[in-house]
Length: 175
Image 1: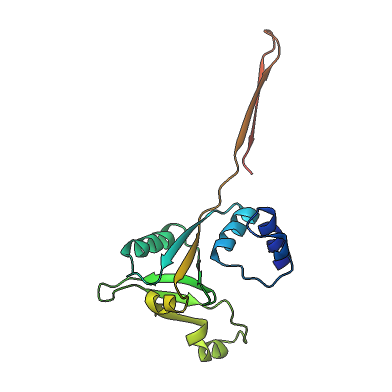
Image 2 (image 1 turned 180 degrees about the horizontal axis):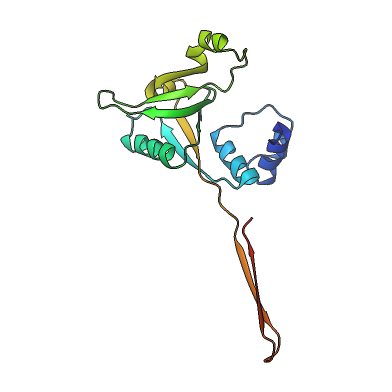
């Protein structure tokens, strides 16, 4: 796992942040996480940027449900000033204007015992509607959906020899 310093260096190296970002306590949000997952793990991400003053878009629900069915990875949720949450699941109901989401607070630092987690359950892992969680983020919410890692591929074919001894070499780098 890369250190905070390594992540800061990577963000400076790819041109996302200025040199002054190194060693700072500036926020690394959903968009930066998408850059870092691709940089360190060749795992591209999809960012969904949602304006929180607009009604919930059912297409976002379909995208999230499809993500959990096909990729299965958690989704990072963040925005303007509301801290980060990890989205672990989505439950859609025709009775609600927007889906409910199972959220994990990655900032929990208490005891790992079941009793401690149960005491803090409303902060650690809880179901909430997207509207209520998005209200905490101010004017926008970003969702970072990690996709399946891409496999680097390169293929080179070398042909040589004379008419009596032809040869072909194919070099394939699958990572």
